[in-house]
Length: 234
Image 1 (cartoon, rainbow, N blue to C red):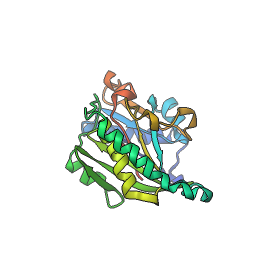
Image 2 (cartoon, one colour):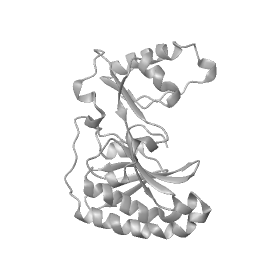
Image 3 (cartoon, one colour):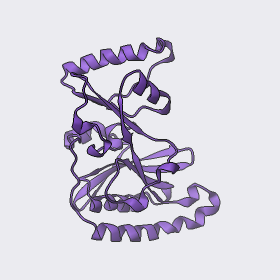
Image 4 (cartoon, rainbow, N blue to C red):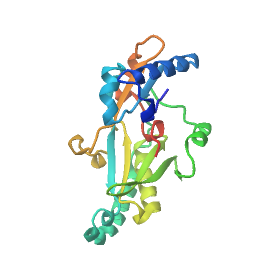
């Protein structure tokens, strides 16, 4: 069970009001058979999650980023927009010669057509390629447009680079960068943003529900196949 909470200012009931609401929501979720609760609280709510709601901090997501259209970041860099063709050349080589071995995880969602129909509306684009597919969405950040890769299925080195390659060709100069937020991968290190340069950290917090104990397999973010498809509302 993933929870996203937005509380109207009129409904704030003091420091423990949200805890009371969370307890009621969790009780209903347990009746539906949910065993684990997880989420990515924002900076304002992170400390509350850990200190008051007693969620465990399992780690934070990595960001894999390529520069697609520098001209969106600074106008004087627009002449560098053609560099995406060099990017696509290298992505083509990476996808051609990378392993197609699928990464598996102890914790991952049931990814099927029913889930995709429920999860994605017209704001999302699906890109299909040999061996898999990717879902992305365009989202305007303060510095420019970002093509966020929401999911890659099945996840392998070949499909990772294929997703970047095909999305780069599709979005052209409409996006300043292409980004895939997810747990740390055994590949793609050339594109991984060093932690010290992350503008903010997306912490994964979780808790066991029925027994109060979080299963051991869920205690490390490395055991989760997790990305924007599992929680994001862009």
